[in-house]
View (cartoon, rainbow, N blue to C red):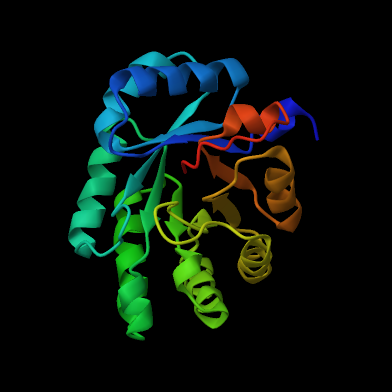
Length: 223
């Protein structure tokens, strides 16, 4: 797999609170120059990024209910709707982990469905926060997402105690079948990215996109 192929797996990501307009402009320019699939940014920066990315193929991905996933479902749905109006091409929502731990699976399903309905055809990725779930919970969450026909399941926010693992990506892919799998959190070098792709990842969420396509390790420690 060459750099051009890897680039099309990458959501070039900047989600930490201190990111400035200058940071977002740089992120967008890097995405254009390296032909990354998308930039993944907080929704407040969508209009700014949209202007920079106009007349390019780079998509805008944003996050909903981020990073905890514990918002009211109606709030998540509204957030998704407004982000799409502003120019988001994809939505990454955080699942309600507390409801999973409370065995409230119907509530989990309805939460995802509310955002999926609000997306109205815009691709939805559901972030499971796999580091907080048992293997059985990962499987059940993936089964729920498969039943609802979301576009992707995603490993992690990158804001918790762990990120993507090859084992979890493989388990997710095995469970969801044709649905996409996005690996995110802690992927900072080419070999790790390729391992995730071999395990079944069809998208990679990283802040180290340039390091990955250049075959270099990034030790910044960010998402």
